[in-house]
Length: 300
Image (cartoon, rainbow, N blue to C red; front, top):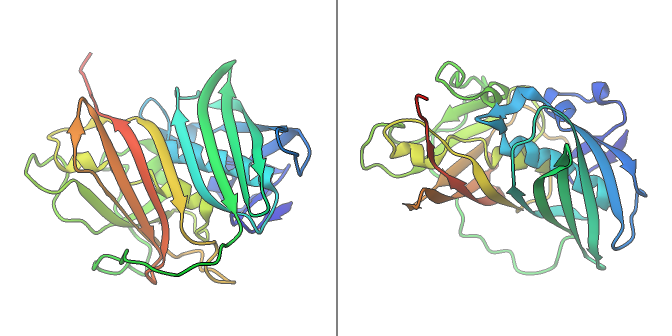
């Protein structure tokens, strides 16, 4: 098993040996390419899209983001170059089953690596990806992003039963303790903002892979203004990783993070949702932005 501290993850040829379902279902296997590729070289990974992370018409976008990030981390193969940016354009939902992820090292500088990737299945491209990895850079430390004043996470890790509330299948794999004002689908003039303490149902230290997943794991913020549920497929998702993970040498696998998403405008059936994720101690872990479509459900 190859340890990859930069992403806090591991890649193995024996997926059954991975510790949690999240790790097993986002595993990738190198089929072609050197461990340390040269600029322009491609690396081919095999992956298996699980049916257990479905959200709407296909697999959950954050689940696919974690899988794609695994392939990029393995392609970089440098623990000092942590994930800094991940952008995914979702072209079509894959079916459960085998898929390929082809990564290309576009540039390798002394401090920064830039990669692209394509996820493919059945001869069709599923997703287009760009990623940036770098060492730490010197500079001033300034932050005006503060942890919201909310009730702390409950120590029991118990959360709401999202599946009983009608959430899609992927929600069975998360723990959510809501910390927001108002209720969804109330049809009132409340803010389109969602907050909650979030974690995987199987305790697992927070890392870049889980942050990629969490960036799309909350209920869509427009649900706070809509009067009924709707499909909300993601067009593109960008995640900026703001802290090297893990934060501590011996991280607590039961720790939850506080995630918040917000949108201010719905127009032409599309909206932009901004997300922020903090550790319990107030450390900013990730920021995200996604473009998504609101598709009303029909009775047909």
